[in-house]
View 1 (cartoon, rainbow, N blue to C red):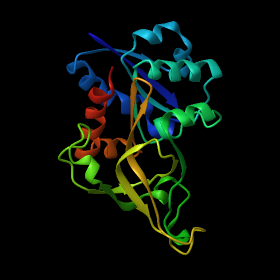
View 2 (cartoon, rainbow, N blue to C red):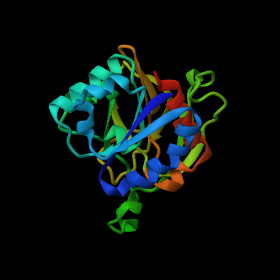
View 3 (cartoon, rainbow, N blue to C red):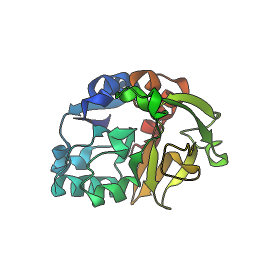
Length: 228
């Protein structure tokens, strides 16, 4: 039986417990024995050599140098790493080694007009499109999924060319923001790190977004695809 490690915690706004609980049954029916922990320091343990898949939902927070090194080494040796939204793309901001591993870091998201803002998370809930690329047509994570619309946080991420991008999203340039032209950045990508596979799905701010059929399908598929 394959071994899956679910690492959850950090900022509570992304409901890490409820969000990961949604996917544990899928892991179990896919043949994984699931272990759940609430600290990234598990990555510093020798037992990582037995882990076939890491599902990480840990927004912000900190991880020690030893933990980040343990995760990097585990992935390089074949452990898969998957996650969504801030649970993987906005984790451990103090670690450049972690950012290099996952290949993308949350920078911002566009907001409504200032007159429409109320000072809560909904200020950033805007309609946007996840545009599936030709590379996604036959990929095991995204095959058969067409471009789709969401109304939620739209992640602007800083990324690099090692990513294999499966979907993008284009950020608007309204006059109340300082950027002066639209910006297209990855919304879903995979990444090869040594012998290991990584998959990042940037939608997933709230449980209703994770329930969207296309979002949930990509996340569930990514777990099987990335596993050792």
